Amino acid sequence: MSYKTVLVHVDETSRSNFRIKIAAEIAMLDGAHLIGTAVTGVSRFIYQDGNISASDPNLTIHLNFLRERAEKATTNFNKTVSELGLSSYESAIANDEAGGGIGLQARYSDLVVLGQTNRDEPSPSVLPDFPEYIVMNAGRPVLIIPYTSDVTTVAKRPLISWDASRESTRAVTDAIPLLKRADIVQVAIFNSKAQPDAHGEQPGADIALFLARHGVKVEVSVHKTSTDIGNALLSLSHDLDSDMIVMGGYGHSRLREMIMGGVTRTVLESMTVPVFMSH
Image (cartoon, rainbow, N blue to C red; front, top):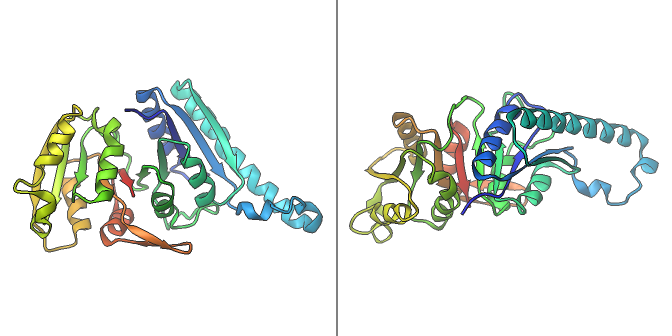
């Protein structure tokens, strides 16, 4: 099991290059093809009549400006990846808003790399709930890169948040190509007595055995907390010097609005290391 196609969202923000380098490193490890996609930021439905220029010349000028901005992002991607020595890559521009454009292309990729929303540096082409939207709708694992930290490694010391749920199972399974290369994988279980049937007599024993059969080096720790599990998880990742958190993404969508679970929301807002998430 390995990733053969890695998709990274590129844009005009200051963190785009950092995302590109992490995505390229993962692609090189697996011999994968890397796709760097920029979006214009305008819904594709505006193009459907095929006659924009005749209906509104001013709109066409603005759309051309958005296209040029996306082209600059892909030019930077191509330059960065070429300098890193990756042999198999391509850039693309989606005439769409980020959720629709990246979400569609994600379905033809094994892994999607995105940036955490930085409300102090809003992107004109990306809505604030973009990471949440992709996690909930793309059907692919998503690696979200924080804007507050320059980690030097990814997935050398990952921390798995394990609660035996479907979402958590999906995230762990999707992350196996990365977990197999880790020096050590920490599995953390919080408040296991709340779900005794899911965890069994020895909480963590089953998931540790499952991962060990994949050649993953595992350590399990069980924690009891009366505080928010999201903050407890972030605190534990700091104490363990983790360089990635693996967890299920919990929530649902209501029209375009993402209604996220409490732990998911806390981690996405306060993360300081990359977060690997599947729904």
